Structure formats: C-alpha cells, structure tokens
Length: 542
Image 1 (cartoon, rainbow, N blue to C red):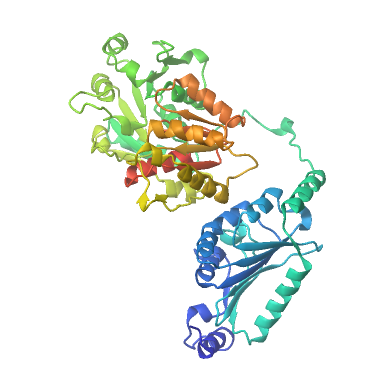
Image 2 (spheres, rainbow, N blue to C red):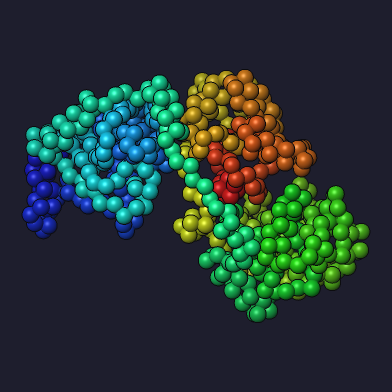
C-alpha cells in the first residue's frame, strides 16, 4: 500500500534531489522506448495492479490493441473495468479497429468528435494512489514499442492537485463523447471509404529486373560455407529459420561453388517447383538448365536437377544417374534424414547420401532437433556452418512480426481436453465454441480471415471442419492423404477467400508459402519444444 511518505519520497527524488531513497514505482519517470525499456512494459506494469483505468488516445491500431488484449482479458476475469476515449481525427483509425474495441467486454469505449483531438493519456487507479502516463504515445504498436517517444509517468494521491486536474479533464472528455456502437461504426465506415484518397503506384518506375543480393544474415553464412570448404569439409549444415530466405541462401552458395551439376533434394514435389523459381532468379541460365525428377516428370540430364527423395533414392534411378554425377548436393528440410517408421531399415535419405559422392553436400533446416533421438548433425559431420535463429531473424527484421497468444486449455468436467481425449469431447460443441470465442476476441490482421488450424488427429480435423461449417465458417481438412493438387487447390481457395480456414494435421509443418494467412491456431497440445518450434517456425514463415 502506498503511503504519503512513499509518494513524497518519490516526488522529492524526481523533482528535488535524486539522492533521496525512493521506490521506483512512485518516482516520476521519462518513458522513451530506449535501452530495451518500452512504454508498453510500463502499461503492463500499471495494468497488473490497477483497480480501474481510463485511456484517452487520438489513434488506435490493431497492433497496439492486440499487445494489451491478453492483459485486458485477465482484468476482465478479475472483474476490473476501464474506459477508453478515442476519436475519428484525420480518419486515422480504421473501421476494423473500432469493431475490435467493441469486443472488449470490460472496456467502455466512447468517441469524441472534436477536430484536433490529439491527446495521449493513460490513467490508472491503484486505490490509494493514481499513476498517469502522459506524452506522445498513441495506442499503436510502433508508439508503444519502437518509436522514439517522450512520455512522463507521475504518481499522486487523490488529494494531489495534478491528479484532480487530470481526472476532471478525463471526465469532461468522457461527458463530451458518444458511446461506440455498431451503428456508429457503420456510418463511419461508409464515410471513411468516401474520404480516403486512392493511392496508385506508377509501375513504370518499378525495376523488376533488379539483381537479388544476399541479405545481412546470408552474407556471413556464405562466407562461413566458403571457409568450411576451404578447410577441407565435404559436408555442412546450415540452420536457418523459416522465412529467412534459406532457398535463396542455397542458390547463392551454389553460385559461389559453381558446380558442373547440382542435385537439390526435398520430400515434396510442391516445394521443388517453388525452389526452381528461386534458383533461376539467382543462377540465371536457360530453362533447359533446370530439370525436375519426381512422380510427374523424369528429367535426368539437367545441370540443376531438383528431385523428390523417394525418386532419387530408388536403386534404378541412382544407377542411371551414377554416383559421381553431381559436384554439389543440397538437402532441404535436412532434419528428415533419419525419418523412417522402421528404425532397422536404411532411410531413403541415408540410401542416396551413402551412394552419391559429391564434392560438397549441404543440409538446410530450421529445426535440426528431432523427437525420435536421431542426430541430424552426425549426418553432416557435425559441421554447422551457420545458424540463423528465429529470434535473430525477428531482431534483424527479416521476418514479419507476429503476436503469439497463449490461451488457457479448455476444460470439461474438470478434465483438460488434449489429443488423448475421446473424439466426442475433443470436438464437443463447448470446445468449438470456446475456440471461436478466443479467435474472435484476439482477431486477425487485415479485412478478411484467412486462417490455418493445426490439429492432432485426422478424425478431429474432419469433425472440426463440419462443426465450423455449421457456425458459418467455410473450412477444408487437409492431411497427408490428400494429393499435391488437392493441397494446392485448398491453398488457392484460402487465398481468394472461398475458405476461411484450412484445418490440417502434419502437412503444413514444414515450409509453406501462404502469404495471406493472418491467423494461425495451434490446437495440437504438446509438451515437446521441438514440435512446438517446428509449427511456430513454419507458421511465421507463412
């Protein structure tokens, strides 16, 4: 509990003598998003102990709102309410963000229609004292976490004059404002579209022929690979988070190695076709330089051969190609090298790796750790040339930022529902409703839902799709039983909005390119950090 003496010490420390001993929570403080300390960190701290709050901010974005939604949900569960005053100033706030604000069950929202409203104030009632953050930060993600903002946090008792001034002014703003309603949003949306200027890009100035060059994380990786080979290594492994451009990195390394013939191996034909497109951009050459060896095409003589592992590991195919055919072999998704349901048999990867004798063999993976105990590093002579982690990639802004929301497991009759639960409970009406309640609350980026749901079992996925359909969500289930064409059709339907969700089990865990996906739901419970990181890596790579 704060005392007047503690608040007095804090004020004296901030305004008179910084040699005075005072608790940090009562000290005036400048918040600037510098040195790893963000405005958002202080909002979190204040919300943890508040008994009520009022925000008055000109601008709100979905990113800023999602950053505090989980905390607001915790407050709602504790019965704590707040107020938010915002505006239509400059038409900055998008209609969708007002719809998101209406989802907050414990926040009363009002709109002030006052030209020039540019307020940024956050007031927290802690019972025996009040904290206020006032300055330049709107409720936007960049303002709360990244921009160079200046905000002053001060504390005061209810008897303090500064608190009285702020409280009275916030009450005045509240009284001048109108409640946010569906009708208000509908009217705003109509006029918002009319007022928004249309921006057009003059495509005549876009140079589509510009040369692709290595990014700041690919450059040291290429140097490390060259150094590894210079030291006599014939094998190497690169650990590269999905989405960091590992296919381009591979192509750049092939370019610097300059082989007479190269073999690119992966487990799915769908990945091969996209890889050929990427390699062409880096290596150039004629179309005849590139060939596909798969279930649908049999090209053996191309300079750059892209093959599925099940084809290139066949004894007759290996014999036709010859063990010395390739100078450079590249294995994508290299963590699969030990993948075999029968541990006593040689895997397809092991078979062709033991047969071919290239000058250099490169393995690339986002997740080298495996749940079956197979040591992936051993297959590449423990030569880890370079590692680009997910966190490094995010810090270097090579990946799109994302929000990960951990939701409490659904319980029924005291039982936590997981993948061992019988099907009728796994996809019960209550659990599906719980799923949709949470996905609706936390939302998705953009105007239309394009979602991907990971489940643990085929029967769960098939039943969930039916349950979603009865609730108005077009969904399709995809598993390993579906053909490449069926998977591609489902992705196309998700992209164009025909589907709201693809529900899947063990298909999109490793490398998938669906740019429009804006919500990912992991319904597969796991205590394995390896499985979790595989899905998180590849979700972020979407």
